[in-house]
Image (cartoon, rainbow, N blue to C red):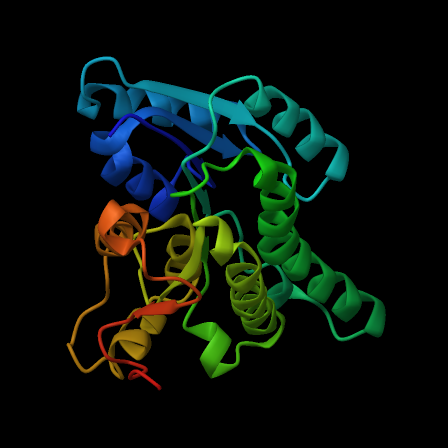
Length: 251
């Protein structure tokens, strides 16, 4: 389909799996993240999977810093319109906050910046450069938005609210906006260090999953690929839960 695709947090884990899943429909996949060398390594490893002629471009940017997002946006505006924007960057930064109010405030702000501002700033900067009609914005939410999890869950709930608002705003222009909300996906940097520190946490997380196993980055990427495909042109303002039945659908 020769689409120009941006994947934030594209150097590792779910973001990298998303980039791999979208390669068949791409003319260019732009990997965005804070760590340039990680992005370059991901681009090198993805290259053999890419169809002939598909360009994989690593671009470093701290998506919580408006000036850096402005610079990235200016660079992306020099090329063709963006067909698919996947806002996957984020993380759980507030869980390590100490007991004092200053530490708690820093943790909550860190989670809001990493999960909400990283999506909102880049999307706003590129909104006028999305394909019309047919553009896709896909944000990464989490099961935590429905199950608590402190500042991280609150940040992901804010992502959901933003998705619903933006979907209504741009629907008349033929642009869809959706979120994918993964459950427990342990083979990612998000979880690997936490499981290494507390190996029992793996079984605790798997126990309430009706399907009896965790998810994989590739399964989350498949949900994103559906929302990015032409067949999803009438799907917008949705939070797609991919969690093995841990939280069942709500109408």
